[in-house]
Length: 157
Image (cartoon, rainbow, N blue to C red; front, side, top):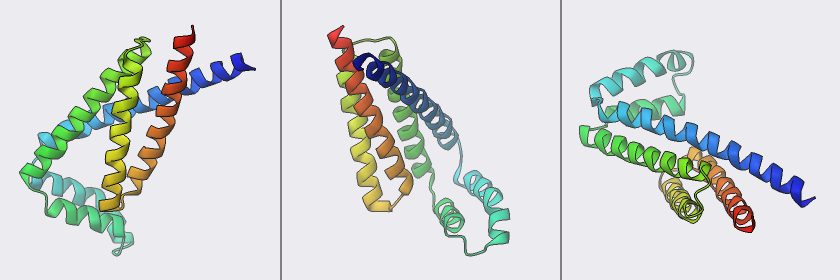
């Protein structure tokens, strides 16, 4: 029974890392996009993105929030968000690379860093009520748990 649990745990661990890698790549793409963008360009893109939805429902909360956010974005805001996303994505991808290589020292470091990300997301949720933060936090907690189990498995072998 333990062997089956271990195999399934390992598979879920690898799946979690794959999804986290996609998230890290998306953060890099968005980060560079924001860093090299301007508030005017971002607003034009958001307007284009929201146009059809607002035509169908002018009171759409998300699209109106998005447009309001991009209307008030400054170059400093975009630079900060870009650098934040880029650094977050790079750290995540480096840690995942070490985890996939089975570097034992990376496991506690990854657990610690992913926990910091989760705490930040909870704090951000409390200030902004972004349900994406809750989803990402739950996902991070699952990956943290799987990383712990995988680390425990590696230590026993």
